[in-house]
Image (tube, rainbow, N blue to C red; front, side, top):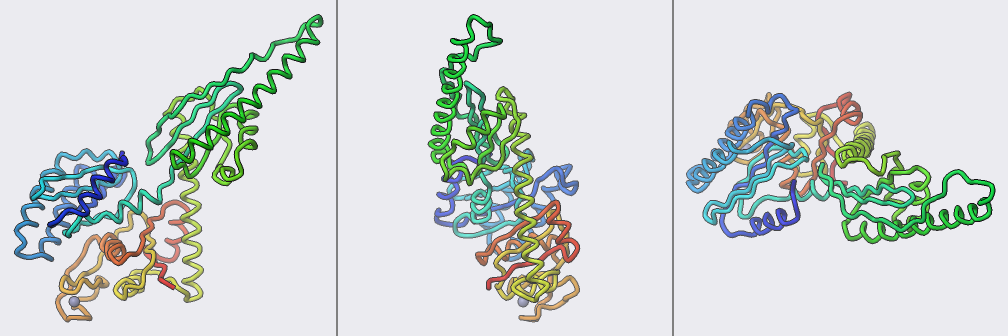
Length: 374
Ligand SMILES: [Zn+2]
């Protein structure tokens, strides 16, 4: 899990004088190509390419050797390894994060953090409140980790059981008292949530617990928070953190898939009317080489081959043998999609990997596509 202090350490590295080697490496074990530590082979290939682009750079050669050793000790517990090594300062940052990122290596003054910071920024923080007549629990979920923040308990007089005739009068009074207390409790919880959501920077809210009380809570939320409410779910107030995390993960996944589908639909609409988008490897490469891509969109796990001119960094179709710009020989690139993503990110663009229904819609047209600056 990546914490705030990690990002601070990284930002210091991004400003450190001298060269830093930054590596993003896909280690996702749901991808067969990464199993049996084959991501180490992928790393070796990337670093070899990087050294070829910086011949006679001894500092780079030494740093690459160190990084290869460090990666041997990494447990692939997430989707991507983020590693930054500054050899002369003796500083290493490493973290396996639960967000998929394209693989590549950078050798630059200051760590190259934009892909990570952008991914963290895009990932939404979820708040989950479980509530019943007298209890409320608040959790936040971020990057697949759950944290419980506070057990809010209001003092509620117990609701009486089956009424007896001689006590009917006082009974209904007690019930009224109870219902008023529940409303007070709900209002109290709503106010606490409003305060905590701002403090914890929660983007989306899920409410669960007792269905009646949860619905009342949804209505009692301040207007500005109602827009962030995603769903009211029947999760028991006593649920374990694992169970809550699973339910929140399902909601989050559904929202992300819906957003991806919208991006792909908009993109394909532009492609059809020859607007500000292109689809397919050749057209996308051309747009990248011209520096016109605002957002690269591709199928998660897409494996495409291509070529790169190491002299001028132009990207080519696998059939191209010589660089159309400088005439040098084009080197083959087995991880073309990562290379394309890197080029787009370096030019200030964005990348979007899609899965699920969005991937199906895109696959019908192409494996890679790009939205361009208007
Ligand atoms: Zn060239």
